[in-house]
Amino acid sequence: MRDTGQAALELLSQRYRSGRGPGAAPAGSAVVGCVGNVIPEEVIVAAGCVPLQVAPAPGGSDGDASRFMEDSVPREWRSVFGQILAGTWSAAKLIVVGRDYHVLYYYLKEVVRLGLGQQLPPLHVCDLIPDSGPAADAYNDREMAALTGRLARVAGRPVTAEAIAAANAANAANAVNDGKPDDPADNPEPGD
Image (tube, rainbow, N blue to C red; front, side, top):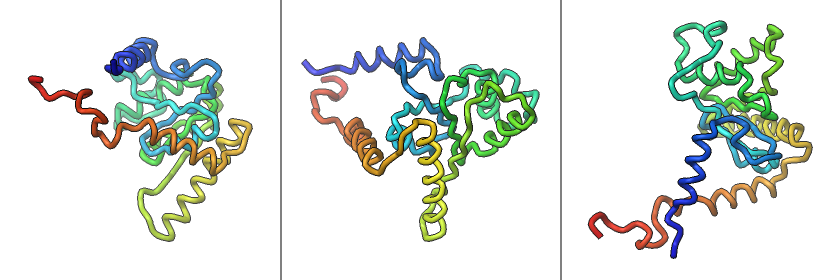
């Protein structure tokens, strides 16, 4: 009998019930919080860390964000900022902020500059340009070198090309065949 996905559904349900944040990772794992959708998570995995998405809180709570942010700042940014500021992610070894949330990075750095960021984990902005060409490639190479260097310091071990290739292979092995079922019996047509 094939797995119907019930185990995966139960795991997801358990994660949603137990909340988000570093506590959602396996015990003993070094967690790296990822803010935004353009963080190369395979590099985090290659460092031996667990990447977890820092997502806006349901219901839109922003905690103390209004102390530091203007009302015009998008609600989802305020929510993520409020979680980090409240210490929800204090157990993370690093928070990596992607290009799509770079302004949030500067708000967090300002909290640190003001001496109010004791509960904040170390921060890193990963500003990968979604373009190609000699200038963009050179810039992205520098950004990746900075990220792998930072992760190596956090993890206490080098991030090698072999480890990144292994993380990519593991990710590909876990992917869902480009959205196509591997067996038609797993996805019967409606009415079958």
